[in-house]
Amino acid sequence: MIRYRDRCSFSATRHILFGVFVVLSAAQVSLGQASSAGPTRRVLILNSYHRDFPWTDHQEAAAEKVLNGAMEVLELYAEYMDTKRVFNEPYLELLRQTFRMKYDGVELDAIIATDDNALNFLLRYNRELFGDPPVVFCGINDFTKERLQGRNNFTGLVEVLDVKATIDLALKLRPATRRVVVVVDDTPTGMGQRKDVAAVARQYDNLTFEYLKGEDLTNEELLAKLRELPDDSIVLLTVWLRDKTGAYLPASEGGKRISANSPVPVYGIIDMFLGHGIVGGKLLNSETHGSTAAEMVLRILDGTSPADIPVQIQSNNPYMFDYRQLDRWSIDRSELPRGSVIVYRPSSFYAEYKHWLWGVVAAFAVLIALVAVLSWNILRRRQAELQREKLVAELAAKNDELERFTYTVSHDLKSPLITVGGFLGLLEQDVAEGNAAKATECIARALGATEKMHQLLDGILELSRIGRVVNPPERIALAELVDEALELLGGRISERGVRIEISPNLPVVHGDHLRLRETFQNLIENAVKYMGDQPEPRIDIGVRHHDNETVCFVRDNGMGIDPKYHEHVFDLFRKLDAHSDGTGAGLALVKRIIETQGGRIWVESDGAGQGSTFCFTLPAAVVVADDPTAEVELAVHS
Image (cartoon, rainbow, N blue to C red):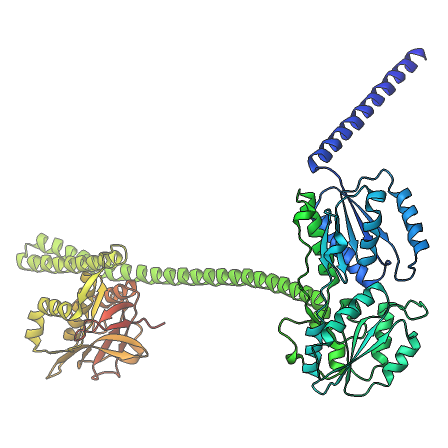
């Protein structure tokens, strides 16, 4: 028992030590990563107004996006002073005490102040509450340089209201306008905007400016005033968030109620009312203010002094419009300034379901690809099957041809062998009888039979060599080739008195010179041999064009061939006239030559006494003799 407990104790101790090692190692790695990530930056966004106030929310979100995207380690604080709903000295004092307690010991690297009340609060208490870190402000109205007197760590951007640009656009879209009704409350923002509008109003001599003020009217009284406006008016909504009783009216609700009760279009100068009743205008953009302020903070954190960053007072406001209000007031969108932003367009079926549509398209694309792959595989298999069937058919044809060849050879060779054997028997008898004359005759007959066998064997050997012994192709003028063949057959042609007519347009071909000459030689010799008793024998040699192919031909006016023998004239040792000389291998040789050249050969004849035309094609490029540059295809019948 003791030994077991000791063993367990040692094991437990070992595991504890290992765990401590892992924790310390993780802590070391974590500290190393934190060290490599840079120092922690602490930034406070102090908002004048409350959460869910559109202008504030948009500024803060844009600033956070810029800061989070640029800094690896950021502690971001956000406070809401809520001065749209509560704004008096006791309340500001309460905020002062709250922030003193909350940020005691927190070292801030920078503060972003959104809108005037936050800026004024920091001008009074920044050093006391936060240790006087750099301050970047945005959304500021009625700005003067005197407000920053002696505060070199303050910079930012002010609200530049494009009041004149918005009024000019409204007048362009509604030329009959004679009255501009300005809706403005008495908040610090409203008072600043009121001054900006008043300064612009002095530039219009033909317009009347009427102010519906927050210190004079309740919300219901304002709406009643709007309902009475004449048709030659437009409404300019600057800001309306609090009426004369101090009742707060959110922008999202107030803008809609003002627009709904107005018989004329309502324009604006800040974007928090866009989408809530106004047509649009050249609008102060909250997101631009927030992101620009954050970019200034980044410059300060990189070492630039706030004093070296001038306060931005230039306008970069975009033209922005609500599609629904444009449609309500029948405003032609082509009359809007170039580059205008139009929000709340009705979504098309594609815009609403484009992700689904692209998903379906992608699925169909995958299916089509699968079908294509499967089809391709099936096609390949089918082609392979067809190729196999073709090879099987060719093999069967070759076997049939070999069988016929074997039969023909054995039959034709047997005949002279029998003849030789017979005459040798007679020779033996004649020698025994001492009949020298008959013995000599038997020897002559036997020698003739052996010569016949020799010719047959030569024909077989020549046939086997065609296709196996290939001569290199060369450029050949068929006219010269025909002349060579005629020269070799000159004696037989003259003996029979055959007239030869050669076409003047014989082409030039690329092929086996020797084999092609054999082709013409055999066809011409065959024509001479089967002239029969034709009193005026004639052979025509030429070319003709038929079905986009060039056909060479040798035509005679001799014995002719019965159509039933057309398929057999090219068989080996086939002789239609048993009494003619030769072995019957000539046309078989010609057929083999043409086929090895990739062409085909056939015979045309109407029957006995009608002459014959042997035709063949060659699949090679040819040049017409009288135009050496003209290319013609010598095609093959399929």
